[in-house]
Image 1 (cartoon, rainbow, N blue to C red):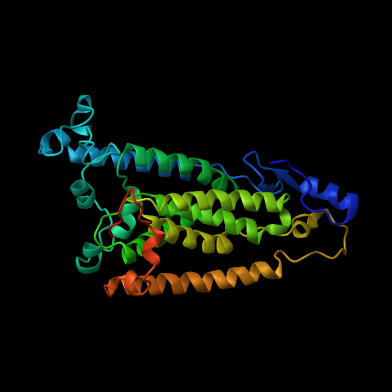
Image 2 (spheres, helix red, strand yellow):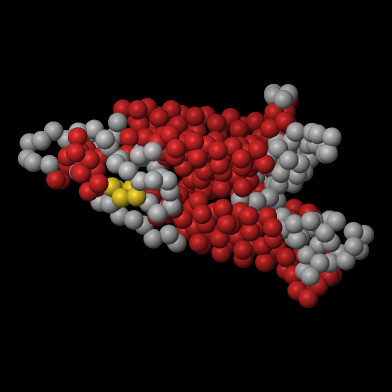
Length: 329
């Protein structure tokens, strides 16, 4: 994307002042105040390391050479010893068995609702079905998360990541109740949702607004469209995206240009308020929707309700049947 003036009001003086206080990010059409501190990203790399470490532990416990019964073939990559993968017919993603994932904290509706194992709503975020699943999620986390952490700090990005993953787990449990679910996809979609709401709520400080918005919407739409394929938990994607989208309005506010440059104004000059009225409106609406959404979702879940009973067409959001494949729950 080509860079340009962030604020075009006020003639050439306004243009020059904008260039003094804002600089282009190297990762795209996103801009940050040069007066603000740019954070060093360490939390996102730690998340990556934690996910990889958990996967290694899962494969060690899985111990395919010892536990594989041979019904689906022999272990893959036997040279890895007890870290070798399940037969590809059982797990084509080069990973452990479903039994191992369930044992170590995969999301399973019956155990959450009737087994007093609500902790699975969190632990499933750190589990992956295989090497391919892990690599796809971690590459996405690096490209999305590091930029956000550099601009907004580890606390806000960490909260968005974890709460979005939690929201994705809740929605997944409400609609998918006969299969297990694992992975950080809901948390990753939360970061995408936060990027979108951050763009909208900080609209006035961006240049090439339409191009940035269209690009981001296309990326999100493509990723959500992939979720309608079988064996992909799109409800976790949607739940995480919605939670992250709302959290972005709450946690990723930027001050106005005029407020940032207040220290350079002459004495007695009128200073703009830190945020615009629409930012406060977005913040309030998002807070209310987050509280209501999480509360209603958790109440429905622990009452044992099935989301499909309240929405007869929602199952198409996760899988659309075609002549090539069929969709289960």
